[in-house]
Image (cartoon, rainbow, N blue to C red; front, side):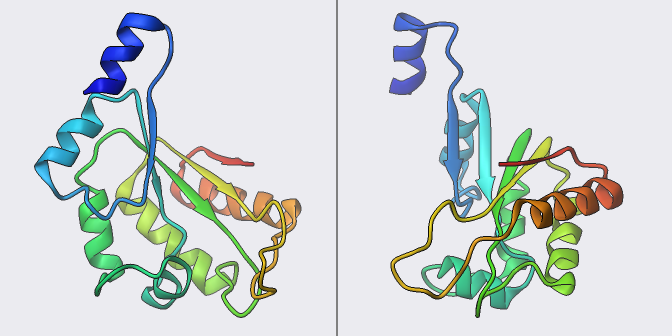
Length: 151
């Protein structure tokens, strides 16, 4: 892997980190490459198929069960999740509960949650206030015992 070779040669104290949507984690070659990195961060913004379709727009037919099966093949991972308000809103109680249930099954090392930093070009989703993100983080920590950080 070119990244780790360059790191080892030029800056051995640096950590290698990848952010992935997890859709190809079921492939042995992908898992082998991911295993060489110091940290694996996988995006998971949804707890239901509808939110997955609306927020992530996966190519082809990809349901939550299949996505989680693929992600679960990676060990020692961190999950990163974005929350938004609007017509697509993954902050509703039922959506947060579904998301948290999947995370309990995945048992990641930690979870990073955030919202939009600026408004998108089209006014279809809005940022979630930090206090609400903190509430979601506390819910996940109390129900799943997973360290959760708000950004």
